[in-house]
Image (cartoon, rainbow, N blue to C red):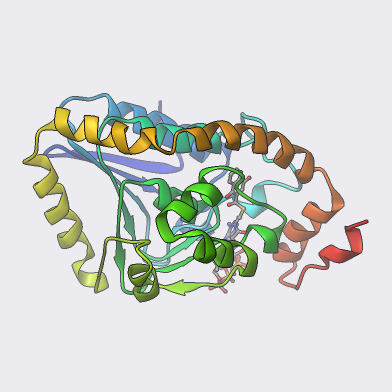
Length: 260
Ligand SMILES: CC(C)(COP(=O)(O)OP(=O)(O)OC[C@H]1O[C@@H](n2cnc3c(N)ncnc32)[C@H](O)[C@@H]1OP(=O)(O)O)[C@@H](O)C(=O)NCCC(=O)NCCSC(=O)c1cc(O)c2ccccc2c1O
């Protein structure tokens, strides 16, 4: 597959997948998700690769979720909601090797979910974290909500989703949402260090450990699939479309007008 929206690199056992849409704050459209799926499968099942790094191009954003310019209601690609996000999240969990999120800027919305489901997250001091779904007429009905609660606890996960605030890298570290925070100029060195430590370990033991961690939360995937059906119906409502419209028009949404 030729990549248009991502970059793919393999160096010394490390596969680096970069969302290359810096002008869109590395937001994903259908095409981006398809390419990410291809890249994760390519790296995930290649025995020469011991660890996968997911990141975003530039220094502004890791990923800001669904591209709000690519939809009004449903998105433009494959899958229930026009984005194979569900499949992508499942694939990141299923590839039998550690995936590290190199969080170099905003990790927002579906982009925040991506870092949450990665095995490890290493962030720049300048990174900003948060969910925006209820502010823009969306929600992640699977791993983005239920699994987040496993990571930071129910109260904090509910705060993150209900209030849609932004959190600093330091706050994320205190909440156990990331593994390490370093100055931006040390981010690559730190990620490399973690990769090298992982590469020294038994790949089979790591793969069993990953599957074993996953086993405890895999049921969330099933619930998420069900929720995705509801999300698909929600995207067709005026209430949801108001969120996208308001974001594009840079104004506050008026959701309650449509909640009858
Ligand atoms: C990321 C921000 C917090 C940055 O705010 P700031 O004030 O610094 O900058 P701007 O808001 O002016 O943004 C700069 C520039 O980037 C464009 N941009 C940013 N994000 C996106 C985006 N996601 N899509 C398209 N474009 C984006 C913005 O328009 C500006 O461009 P200009 O040309 O005007 O300069 C802030 O931008 C922000 O909060 N962004 C919102 C992000 C957002 O709405 N994300 C989508 C959430 S929904 C989602 O991700 C999602 C969708 C699904 O369908 C799912 C389905 C199933 C599971 C999960 C799903 C999911 O999570």
